[in-house]
Structures are given as C-alpha cells and as structure tokens.
Figure 1 (cartoon, rainbow, N blue to C red):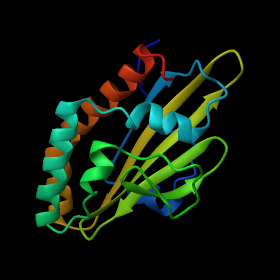
Figure 2: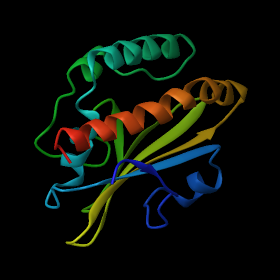
Figure 3: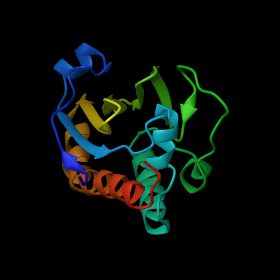
Figure 4: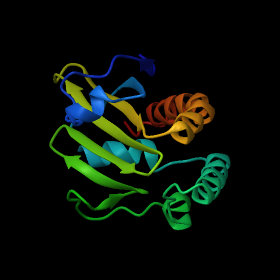
Length: 173
C-alpha cells in the first residue's frame, strides 16, 4: 500500500471548534511497519528528512511569509531539525509548537493573524495492519489567509505525500 488520500480521522484530538471552522483539510495514510514507533518517532521519520531542494523552498516560504506577518521558523529548524529527548505541550517539534501529545497522536501547528493550522500524526490500526495518518487542518482569519492557502495548497498536498512516500520507501515508517 502506498500513500493514499483519506478522510480526516474521526478520532483525532484536533479541537472541535478548529474542525468546525476549517477552511481547508486533508489527510493521507501510509503503512507503518515499525509498530512500536512513537508518534514523535513517526513525526521525525516523515518531517525530519527534507531533501535539499525542499529545504530551500521552505526557507524561501518562511522568509516571504515573514514579510506578510506570518510566524516563520528559524533557519536551523528547517535545515537541521533537532530532536529533543522528550516533548510536552508547548514545546516546539521541528518548527511548530506541540498542541497535543498522546500515545497515538501528536498535534503541532501554529496560530497566526492570517490563519491557524494543525498538523496531526495519528497512529492507527491493529498489530496485523498498522498505519499512520497525517492530517492538516487550516482555519483562515481573513482574505490573506485564504489567498495564502490558494497558492500553497497544491505544493502542500504534493509535498506531504512525497515526504510520506519517501519515509515508506526508505524504511523509516
């Protein structure tokens, strides 16, 4: 099984108000062969291995986004994301604050004046068939947030699927 689009899992811990006000959502599922991996392990297996060309795009995106008032990640968080020995709500994982951390789901994201987003890494299944679902939920606050998503969403969809596919192909999941 490859990475496939799916519906947003109903068991997600993403805030219900955020879900009700969502302007954009997407979810992708991939097989998980390392069933004992924590959600933090899974997060870094997917988002801790950006190819150099994607790092360059992300750096440019954060620089331009900063000009328009979006919170931007530090360059070091893009080039070499550090992994802490443990995480709690409020800590940064990669470039984003952690909003929820449980045994089966990690939710990170950011709230900005133009839009808020959440990224969920949800571990699901049984011992015979484990998989991970990565979901993104965005709530916009104004026209700039909607314009930003209009430009970014095609790249986002392709990029998330590609990062997940590489993690599967390279045996990190």
